[in-house]
Image (cartoon, rainbow, N blue to C red):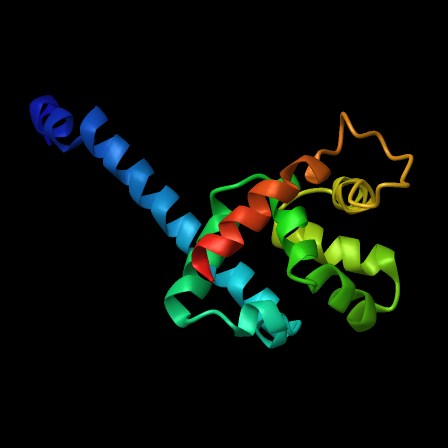
Amino acid sequence: MKVEDSIDAMPTNESKSKDLANKQIQTTKEKYKLLNENLEINGFRGLRLVNALCDENYNKLILKFHSNDLPFNIAMLSFLGFIQHLDTVFKVKSKRDAAIASWFDTKDRTVKGNINVLNPKSTEDRDRYTSHSHITKVTEFYASIK
């Protein structure tokens, strides 16, 4: 093989960018599917507020989890009653926190802190864990898809 042929066969920056974009899209699809499966396995669809949504709005809800950070997602899960539901599924809060952490690819302690600050009486660090500051956004988003 000639040197010129080898150079022509090398991927260009444009093709590398396309490959990277395709991998990111695939990863996002896999995360979306995995999150949706984990939520459904644990009874998410059976929640009153979730069950009230049509399929299109349910998909908007799941996509919203992907476009927001963990504090927003914890506030949304709590608003929908899923955190409370998971307490009955897992019996032990540390197992609940570990499960949620695995779904959102984060640490158990971060999940625990964000759940704790939703309680106004909690002494958890509200500068570090900010899910309490998303309550209004969560309520408004749910009202927009209801």
